[in-house]
Length: 351
Image 1 (cartoon, rainbow, N blue to C red):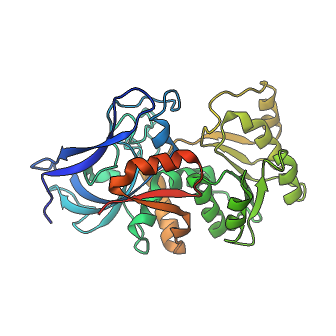
Image 2: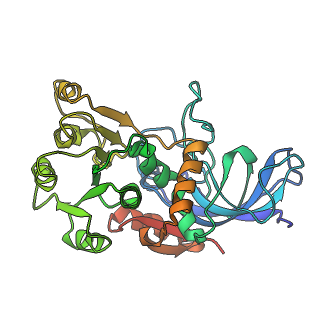
Image 3: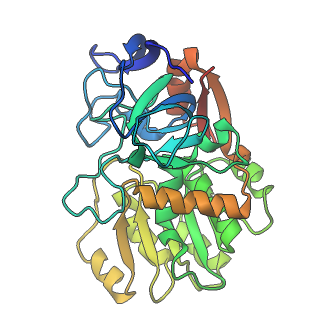
């Protein structure tokens, strides 16, 4: 299958903050290196970080000026280099968001995700080495598959990749964004009871309709989240907390954990990066022999494991998609992301 010489891509503007994105024409190479794969991107999904990079001081890591945003996509292989062995033309693939992490054992590699200080996937075509690609489950649409890499891996790792899972496990999922909604589906498929939080009764009501095992907490009407968690779990606490708020909620997260063990996954930074709590809080973590872990995307192996889980369980991801935008409306999709009114993932469809 041939590929064009040029294609369209969105790049961040270099204007004063707040920035936006604008359409550019890009070129593809005339020839491919041994292990290169050309992909045609059919769908891209957005993450909070994609919009945060357009706002001054909202994103904690380096962002390339004028870079192409986004790290989550689903694509079709259209050409391969002469020594590519894992993929063939027509294969359905996604890209590992952190290109430096293949096995997850790369101790000396910085785990940076695409779309920040490296080129992202909000474009029609791209070239990657085959080691950066993973086949997507056959039963998923392009839009569904595009939601997997960033949010999916983060949710998967937040639940310890389901390693050491015990019967009757429970999890607190903060908010109704992509990571929490992904974690919700993983929990339900793995037998973990999810407790999801939101400030919107309407959002909670819609989520609770998905499965009777789901519990919900409106943190505006029930500001003492720990008390509600303990009530729901009959005083036992939870095994997992998926923290999308940031450091400020860690003391409450620790109190919500079961008496021994459990883990808190620091995923998001919706309320910024300041802790605002005394160091004694960490002693409470020690007392429970609990784990506080930072989640920064994941490796190619993590993505393969998650795709295998989704494929074997035949999990449909359409319920994760809040809204789909046309490629030309990508700037509007980012604006919608920033409103916080979505539940789950925002997807951009590329013709």
